[in-house]
Length: 254
Image 1: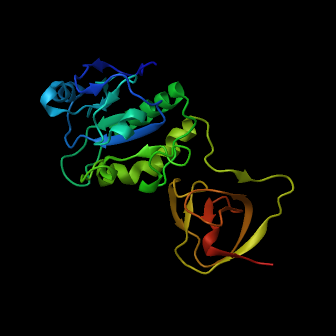
Image 2: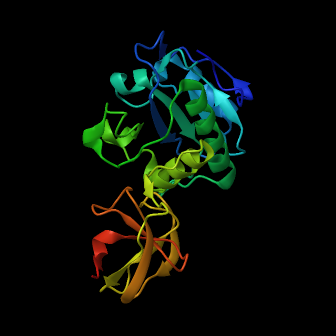
Image 3: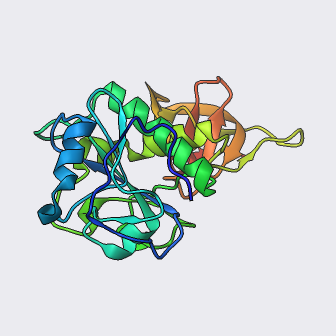
């Protein structure tokens, strides 16, 4: 089992279980609650009395540190079963709500996640924000610390970023997280939208960013359909090219 070549600093913590007892199939992102360096994080995890560690950490300058090798389980998420199957990543963040991370940390996090997925045979990241899916990586393979302990970790900022993080990583992995139906035989059809604030998204799912525009009320032509997160009836691609809308809020016209 290899470690990430993106690491620029290593200080192995005594706080670990070696080896892990489960294959790596999950990602757990944490916030440090402090704009610290990878060296500072290494010093924190070097103390056996803390009984805490993570596989990787990202400093406020975007550098990546390693504190527990991937072959071993870190002590990070207040849950042994999760940490035995997860790669845990601590991210330098603000000390106050919503515990935001800066652009350098975010960029490094995406690159690290892509690398982890490629090396460990994780074809895509899946996020449903559903605690009941813990341990079911075929349905959701991202978990958060707050599900296992009375903590806000990874903070509101990173928690709300999970759909975007999954979508960006999957894009770089070459994954389309939805099955799009758009063939030469697809028959475009019209729908009626009766709400004024139906969001248009950049892709078929709530894990894709909003375009910042709404359809408004009216009749629109759909030129492709897709399954995707956040819609029971699926998603429709607008003929205008503006993006995708949830078909839950659109009535098909005959």
